[in-house]
Length: 158
Image (cartoon, rainbow, N blue to C red; front, side):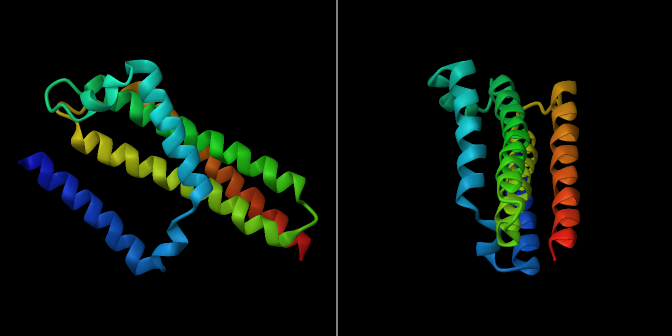
């Protein structure tokens, strides 16, 4: 019961922060969703088979699939940032393409962080692995560097 309350509070806190910050549609980006959830689901199925989805929601034995989901989501955020960088660099002459590329990078990192927080809140025995911490740091660094680079490029394109 405590876990359900914790997950609900986590999701409501994120939803309230989004609702107070901007319109909901500003936080929905289909390419970022496809990258993060596609890679996350692919990682879960490749590591645990189709039964991994069922095992993920098993209250007793779900630590391994949760670790896989969290790590896959963080890797997806890094991949999305690299994809957004390629998109940005191929369209350097067009300042209007900077925003969508930055959105893919930042929103995919946001989606991965939401999966990270909710995944560990849902875990029966939450143990954050060193690899998850390193992936989290990597995802934040890559996304942050991309954001700073995009900002600098936007200044020079004006």
